[in-house]
Amino acid sequence: MWNSPKVGILGGGQLGRMLVESANRLNIQANVLDVDNSPAKQISSHDGHVTGSFKEPDAVRKLAETCDVITAEIEHVDTYALEEVASKVRVEPSWQAIRTIQNKFNQKEHLRKYGIPMADHRELVNNTPEELAQIGEQLGYPMMLKSKTMAYDGRGNFRVNSKEDIPEALEALKDRPLYSEKWAYFKMELAVMVIKTKDDVLSYPTVETVQEDSICKLVYAPARNVSDAINQQAQALARKAVAAFEGKGAFGVEMFLLEDNSLMLCELASRIHNSGHWTIEGCALSQFDSHIRAILDLPIPPKSLELLQPSIMLNIIGGATPDSHLTATQAALSIPNASIHLYSKGAAKPGRKMGHVTVTGATMHEAETLIQPLVDVVDTMRA
Ligand code: ATP
Ligand code: MG
Ligand code: MG
View 1 (tube, rainbow, N blue to C red):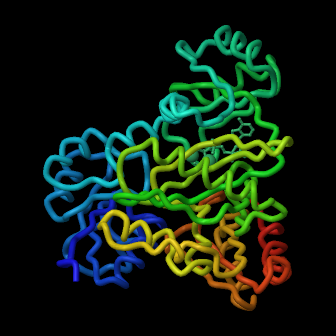
View 2 (view 1 turned 180 degrees about the vertical axis):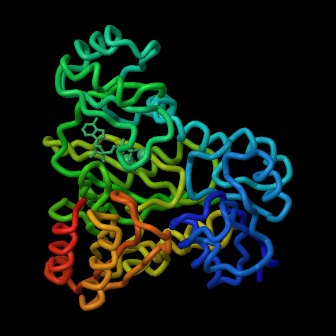
């Protein structure tokens, strides 16, 4: 065996919880840094957890004392604390990778050096209407104004349709560091989970993601009506982007497929990712299994990342009423081939990810037919 290594996880939300599920099956102790009773801690009973936040240096130091390798379920962590503890404990992926990636503008400046295609963009220095108007002249309208940091689920993005929207856009993203992106006229959004190991960069098949109100709603694995050539190109682009960073583990790469079939990077995450939840049922090794193995230098047979069966993942998101997500879950119980994952996050809020359901089928058509009644239920409960 591998001498029972202990893994420290910054963050105990649903991603940490699913990492713990994978660690548990290998008898690997996962020490979680988050508030007491966070979703990951609920399924992991031992005295190695740390109470606190991944933004508190003291809490990160305390976690480092309890484990052999530290990883994170989120990129918005204190990378200065990680830099400090990296002399005593392994940090995967590297604090440098997390620091660069957690700032979307720096991430893009870094990836530009590696020839990764992406939407043209401009940094704002003063956040004034005049400055943004000048950028609007250069990029054209619509354009997407984005916060460089602390962005998730579209909270940090504002679509600027014309010069008239500028005051509202700057008000919506007030006091945040900003950059603006040229509009990407995509016909589809694709994503690839990449696993970086000590000597390889592996990838899962290309999937199609559907965002509603900037939140991931559905993931189709494999991407529908996408040629094998595009599937391969997307995987190659994702691997090339991830290879530009130091460290081991899972990375989620989001891309736009444009009208002319060319690909552009949307953004990259230094962690397990919502677009990879389907791998729990769709592949022999899930993204969570692979992440644990990658950071501990355990073998990952590339064949185990291949698609076993077409899979569709639907997020269960807090809706119009506090129990909307339970209505969706109730409906999912009767769907054949549906695996339900609830995150035990407590009270639902509109837009909050409460769980997900993955439906598999012998064909994509079968999976689509099976999941449709559930999609209909979810659509009627939208906030
Ligand atoms: P995540 O939850 O994935 O971290 P985020 O808040 O970091 O989301 P992005 O991934 O940058 O935000 O953007 C969210 C969505 O907004 C994208 O999936 C896409 O649908 C849309 N979007 C982002 N940038 C552009 C663009 N330049 N042109 C058109 N649409 C865009
Ligand atoms: Mg993001
Ligand atoms: Mg995104």
